Length: 251
Image 1 (cartoon, rainbow, N blue to C red):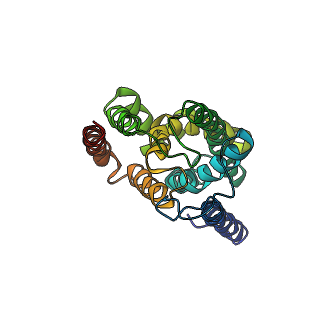
Image 2 (cartoon, rainbow, N blue to C red):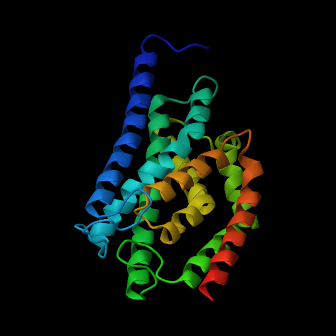
């Protein structure tokens, strides 16, 4: 079924705004990296004019990072909801509710990981750029996140993210409120699926655009219907091997 002349412009405007928000978030991250005195790899190359040591500084940075990294992974889910707009009384308001609910959950995760980073700085496990100060801590993170890829929790959470149609059909609610509730649920499963790749920022540096870009690319692949289920465990094996290699070099 084709969209009506009234619906199409709204759909186009919302999708353009969605992608503009992603581009703006990456632009902000680039500016923050410049102010932190690091290059795209995350290596210090200048004076750090924006030390990330307090919640007031870390939370906005992580919230913007969540928008930059996680909104691209939501595209298959939003496209799936659009398919149901013509067969299950879905609405554009519900579409917005799904988007908002998803983002609310990830902003909550941004607050949590900001507190974690403050604790890691206090424990001298990461520096003020969010980079691991010891090889053993970096190795532990790689191994833990790699091992998580083989767990039942990962399988369940990834299953929901990988096949959002099943979630929608089992939890379908109409209108903005219904979309918001489903977005919150989907966001929770997504955090359960992808938290490890956020934590790995402490290995490559949370201000490393290269590291975060690669993590984003992998998470997008992980949620694609055609290939998502094929990359999860191989990635876990690679992370474990990388962790063992880092540990060996740290001895």
